[in-house]
Length: 276
Image (cartoon, rainbow, N blue to C red; front, side, top):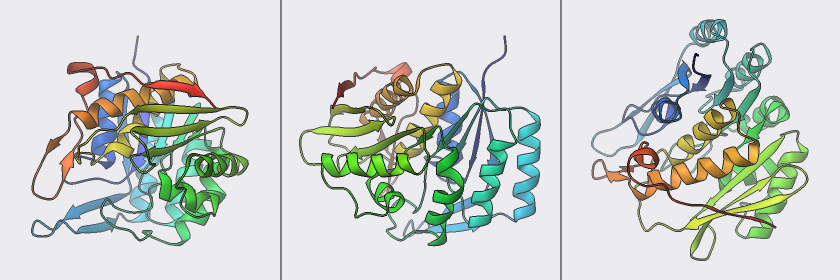
């Protein structure tokens, strides 16, 4: 019996920690067949680690998507989409595919940067991606942008942002609070339009989290492809990425990366799920 096929439409990370590298490693750990349509090549200055974002020609992206859809994916995930045109292409890719699930990781900045890659991206995501999404997986900053509110800083604000994003058409929303919310727990808020669930794990005193967001969304994608319910997919993805962060390692003086295989090879960290 063949593996489920998981397609990522995203950018590269030359350092190997995030982007399509993280997606493919995560897909492999979940025993799905991962493959890609590359939108952007991201490089890092070895002296400063500042990012160079290099979008691929639109025709090359279109040709990759045509190839990818011929393989008939079971689930599609998005990552870095450098323009409104590519964002619309990602939507059309899902709608024209055989995939049952569409996971939107709304990448807006490169790690370490604090400005949206392209200000028009937020509106393009709201118009094209969110209404078609099985799952949207924003961090706190991205949640505020998609909900058109200030960046959430409390649990109640996370819940309100999740409610607003769901109203834009997403079937399921999980906002990654992580260490950005006060307290001794790393908290994520899941909302399916009816009930909220608080997914918690112990905060990890480590800065080796490069690639965590991509890894989390890719794990949800693979879990959905493998037949898990949306809530199960989110619960298990949080456990997977928590193990990856806890067992991350320092790659160089600038960045530490998650260990994508930690959940399967080192330790399986438990996540608490509480309906709120």
